[in-house]
Image (cartoon, rainbow, N blue to C red; front, side, top):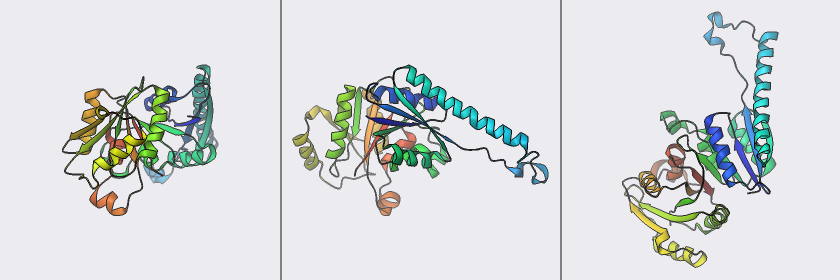
Length: 283
């Protein structure tokens, strides 16, 4: 991993994301790009009598907002200094605006090999309704994205579960996965969860045979489970084997697939899972 982009908001989830990035990074060859997207304070004048906020645009207000921005810039530099002191190559990226826009700009400018982001919240109603920053970045970034949930504090990535679909060619994704596994010294299990809510379209054997012809995959590394819901089956298996990392692939879906027939399991996992989730994108 030449460059790893880590958006942070100075929360505990940011600390978890940084910890995960340091597990994956190579001190000699990797650069950690620490991004903070600063969103300036915007006063809500509707909260004050007469819709007037005393001091707005005045010297005191501008001084306060300037000091706040300077404080966050210092925090970002402190994070970078700390990581550099540990022997990593690190660079601060300061942006103003939404984290999604800042990440998109950073991808274009720096071409990172991976993004590591901490997920806030626990998959509540609003997360499910409009999605979170981690959801949008995880689904639409042009590079792999590792999402660290708030329930997880990564210390290693040795037991890896790949949630296979066996509905389309995933060989290109697995090539990237095996490069990562070799770097981490991790073991891999291919898991297929069958569910009435997500029926098979293609025969699994065809894709399994193709994967075995390209990779060294033993029969015991391929596991099938039946569950009422695919997401529950995946998480139950990860808990059963003590998985450190869950990997899925994402692809562009039609409107009918996405919203009417077969909602994306990847989207649901990004929002809900308590296991660190890495999303690879089919090209």
